[in-house]
Amino acid sequence: MLKRFGLMALAILFAASLFSVPVLAQYNPDDYFTYLELAFNEDEKDLREWLIDEHQQFLEVYPAHKNAGKAMYQLASVYERRGKKHHALAAYLKMMFLYPDVAGLVDTDKLRKIIEKEDDYEDQRSWLNQVIYESRDDTSTVDAFFSYLGVLSKLEKKELKDWKLANGREYVRRFPNDARHDQVILWIGDAYKNSEKYKEAAATYVKILGMFKDSPLLMNTRYAQGRLYYENLDKPQNAIDVLTEVVRDAPDPDLAGDALFMMAEIKERKRKKHDEAIADYRKVMENYPSDYRDAEALWRIARIYEKEKKNHITAVSTYNEFLEKFPKDSRGVEALENMAKIYEDKLKDYPKAAMAMARISEMYPDYKEAPSRLVEAGELTEKKMKDYAGAIAYYQMVLDKYGSHKKAKDASKKMKKAQEKLPPPPPAEAGSGSE
Image (tube, rainbow, N blue to C red):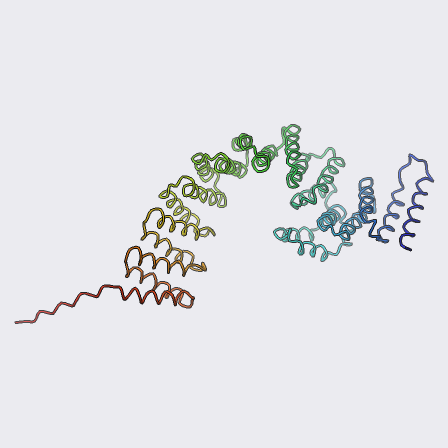
């Protein structure tokens, strides 16, 4: 009750101070901050949302005030008290970028705890921790704000959409002559997209294309637009039209390669034009070499041949090409297993099916199912080909390579049974004696 009375009295005193000057006069920023600080220290739970609004208004009107940094710290703290951890992190980071003189107010361990506890930040912890400890004392306000927006854009959280929009627009308003508005507006468009406001995102990308015709980011914007058409607005042909421009005009080969890869994917998954998709995936590999893109493109070609075109011989050939070019790729085991299945079920080529299974232990000896695949190779050789000697050789490989594995005992039993099925050796010829 005392706290509530104290806050009410404070509000009355502040209101009285406002009406003691002409109505059209500005607030006194020093008095305004003193009021906010006292209200912050009162920390009445029912008024935390109101406190957030009040701090935001102060910072909007007085972003360069001597106490703006403290106001940002208080805003972040109120967000944290409200359980809005994403907003708290965003506000603390803004304070560290724009007001480094008060950055010491923040317990960096507290920030790290937010990052560590939120599963959403699992893939971003490393670079976020680096951001926290960077020095920014000699950075101009405009550059610091721009850098902050770049960090903010990487926090792909739906909850931060309004915060991102407000900060992007604040930048444009505070620095109307800065030459980086195109990038800021692109980040705004991405914020709409990440919060599933797809039509607003599309309109924002069009805004960039119309307002910044000489921008070096035009192709990046076109790529984002094409991706939006494909992934979110279900307009595959529009996406292809836009991405075709990116492939043709983008000065960045990586961007052109990504655009061509996406075109291939659209043709594969939306248009079902599998021959065109294969051709585009091959062009990606030939014209825009990149280990990640090349491996993914070749893998998709193999899958199209296997699953869509039912061209099993070419599918096997493409899986083999994949293994030769990308032996360290994590999908190598799957490629060999797919080959074995095609050989066994589709082509009825049992020797090659068994060889594909055995190759797993050669190329990926640590794969947990490698001993099982060797046993399966032996079983296939034994049952389908009646080649007991060949089966024994596969079982022996299990004993030699994985003697302590649980499958070794199974292989040993099967080997003994296979040995019993071997034809008896031919009788030895009697030596011819001298007369």
